[in-house]
Length: 185
Image 1 (cartoon, rainbow, N blue to C red):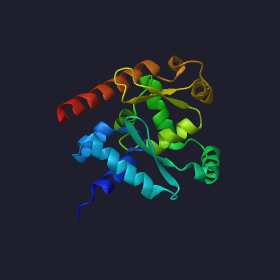
Image 2: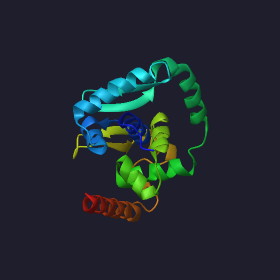
Image 3: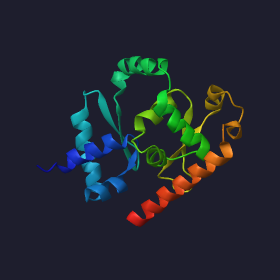
Image 4: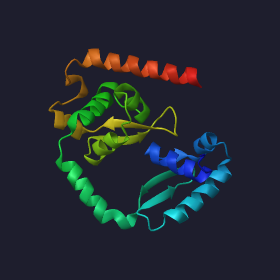
């Protein structure tokens, strides 16, 4: 059974876990940006009162929790913050640190799994911040904060264990990922 375009849009936004441009969504769905806007307006109306909201910026869309759910979401976040970082959090943080910033897709590629929740947890803890990618304004990079360095007990990235070796390996891994993306385009 094939999904409707509205259901496909919902699935894409849910899976992305971050803002997506209407242009990219239109390309993936095989529809115009105007149709993406129409589908988004319908989705926003259907989501009203569900605890989830569609955030529509000028050229981007993102699924988020509704403002009315802030109290219950705050309880969840407090629970998340009381837990240890865990292996996934440390892996993602290491990618960001040794790579001197990374996109979510780079983190995913190096770790071999979807890292959306892990990156979100690191952001909630204030260990990474999201910045605009200077090479492509439609993408975001994640950069380690000074709190991350303090959490790890180092004064600067270069003080991390095997920094020179591992940062080179991270650089090569990202280059390989980019080359793979280029050949698939």
